[in-house]
Length: 290
Image (cartoon, rainbow, N blue to C red; front, side, top):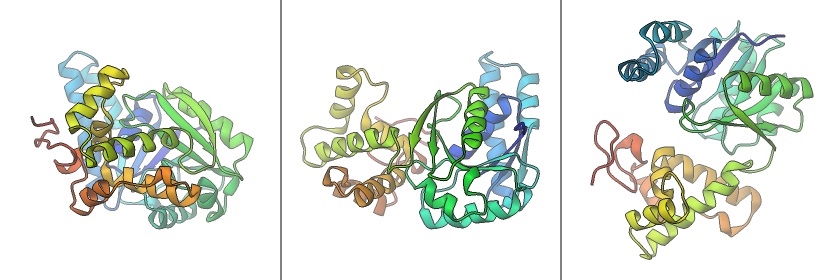
């Protein structure tokens, strides 16, 4: 069965980015959130982002209008009945994801594929809560989806070859490069990334260097495009902490433990760029303040 219509559950930073990428590839997109208002807000954000590309001459006004027209905002997963593939992009919380995955499972037609954008939660566990375990898979887009080339495909124990092949083909049609991971804590990318982000935070916590020194060292000494603390702020410190806790709990190795400073920042509500403060401060437009 050809994938033509893609549902996206979540209209925030990741969900709206995935919706934009899918629509740009010619798929019809149904984007849902907790309310119609939030879904519409997500599409408005996509329209505004594309407007900046029009102003810079990167796309035409007609292409922008056609892309946005392919994204239909809806109030919840009950409207995913016509979707061939659904991608869940909710907050990194296992109880919430299980609840949403089950709701989508009930709404989707039997032959549809159910994917999760989770960056650390077991796809096998999510699949086991559905009536279609062989058609459940991980489709982990990198942040931000319109700019990052990689999609990490995660196979649950139950995922069929047909599901895997169809999802890889779908990602390639979106212009992405795929890697494949078996279902293990953190998969491939975050198993490598999160210890580095936490170690940068430990270095800051212990006063080894300032945040600017640590990030400059990574950018100029390791040739990274962003420093680890800047990247953590972009991802969201709550998400970084959630993944670190999954890695620490499920692998049982203290090298994955989260720093006290990271926990304190999350407890304070300083989650990074999305709240205006994390390791750095940001203005209303998300630009880093000196």
